[in-house]
Image (cartoon, rainbow, N blue to C red):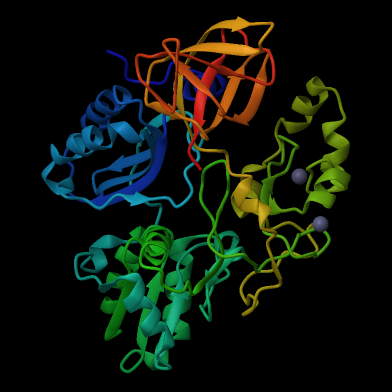
Length: 450
Ligand SMILES: [Zn+2]
Ligand SMILES: [Zn+2]
């Protein structure tokens, strides 16, 4: 029985591309009492590995916290694997706004002491006595109430690139640190102000709200499903976004754009920028914000020192790393003397700049695999494919991709299915159509969806 990953990230990326299936990025969490987390973990791995699910999941005695990507067609089957457990019956799955087929390249399920490293002494308060859950619309209207204080319960590197207008963004590195700071700061408002809280997916507020109620706050509210669910609702219901900038997420994209506003600066030159990166020096790996110009000039490094190091032979670099404690720097996430424009705590209320429109287009295109090449007629520049999946119409935008062909996009102007000219061809048809380049037998045909 396979209980762990056997593929490398590269192999997985290639498999995902070849499968050509639409994937969904989703997250969910649940507090529960799990007697045997190790056994629970293994059950999930077996069920999810069979569904081609990928992601980073933490399980503990206190519950589960998951960020995942699954093939869209397996969503129903995936839900069934959750319904098996009483505490996950009817659970809400937060879907990310942008779906990137390469969000996760492994299925990693870890047994931890807690599902969120909140550092809280849970026994001192009742974690089930939580705040009132709000939907996007309700959250927006409470934000407009002058009697409301809104607090961001994420870390400084998260709130820096995007936050709700007017939010208090504690300059902290851990969730645990933020609680007493805010408790102190809001000491005089416990009785009469609305305490409105939010985080990425709602999980941190679940406990924070219970903590603040225990501390004597009377009106405690939390954004249900966090920024992720808020974003989904504002898009679906066409509500104005009061969240500005980017939502920081822990996959390789390091953030999804919610509005065109850029609220942060390049940590090196101060220009408006909200692209996080990790320092190219493996011995440093600092998470910081860097603009394209600085990236080019600094070769993706956080400092001149790191830039020197990446030009050393690898053996020497490894020697340098020995005995050096970089862990501290990594977890400080962007706090380094070398970064002149790193700010946290007080963040600008208004956007510093607008993102260029093409940022959204950089997101990898959504496509669905139609079939494989069977033949190519040199003289007439016609390709023959076997349509294995879906359908193809005149006017469709398609992508032909293969190791030698590369990625070629064009519009279908004519189709012949099984030798007859037609408007639409269906799965099972052998189709030919004109192509503006040479097709190879290993090439695959995809329909571009958006
Ligand atoms: Zn810069
Ligand atoms: Zn560095």
